Length: 505
Image (tube, rainbow, N blue to C red):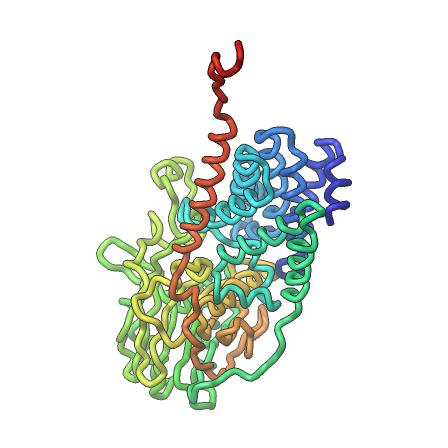
């Protein structure tokens, strides 16, 4: 690896920039729909090459930006799909949205390389700043941690490290391993070889094995309503009746779960439909996504219906999608007639108060997540008490029919691993799935299929280390690392004063 690094470092800078963009693009192959996990090491290794090859921190910053932009622009191609739902109105925005988002996310990688070079250009510094940049990406500007590099490990043994370290600790470990493998030859046997060996073992696919099950069964309902037809008055009855028919199908589930915004009505106007759903469920509680209004605010919500069709529990989505469910600086965009793609009310949705648990009696409690909320590891860990399972209702019709829904499923699997809990996932167009506490899909309905499954509910696993600690320990580690880097830089730049008498002058 060191010889390869040396040869790459000998390339002219313009060639490195081109290679950086290409390396980032290769890294996209680590994620669905390709899911070739080893590909993620291409941009990571390239990042260390760029660090050592850049003559100054400004060049390192631009090289990092090229690397990140190449990675995100290909990984997030699905971001153009929501703009095609109403292509005549919003289709022109699609390429701009993709490029601008890739440039924005790439700037986090740019900061990682620029700061690491400014501080001294050591490999361990980049490991710290890269993990720190990914943590920032999960929090700032409401956060967007989609396609974090360790998302690539959800199908292999390395992904199980999420239960111990979470996404940011695992990112630090992976980048630290690559930094060690790029160490000078005299330290190769001490650091480099073990790093490569651990990486190779970590890329072994997760083996199939039995997981403890509860005595409960959950029915997942998938209507497969395309986004451009979902709100069509002529098609509404087709999709609603389809879900009612699946709910009434033979079987004796303990819980029935419909996807996000499964009904195209406001909750306060839907009692007649609630009664029909309750009759079809034959006494089984039903969870479904619906919009509701409270005074002048609209919420993207889910409700729990009892055997009489009454709403017994409600949860309002609290982590909303910017530019989707609401518009930042709405006053500005209103003047150019641009609104959130997914908002169903003028001004967008209001945010709910935060995480809360739903109580399903003998089945246990569930932490509800609506669509985008499953992307945030720190949100999932905010509940005051530990639930028996996680439950995601989502409308992935917005994400198209290829990489978007698959990548979203991968993130739901990450949350299951991190918390050591099963995940019940109902998606409008797929992929609906029952996920075990190790993140394995044990039962699912394929993408763009209509149907239902009665899936046994896995038992919760042991409380994981990450569930106990969250991101705080890694935030402290990264801050200490950054402090050490800044201190080293200040001491290195400090002028040395020599006493005139002692110098012999």
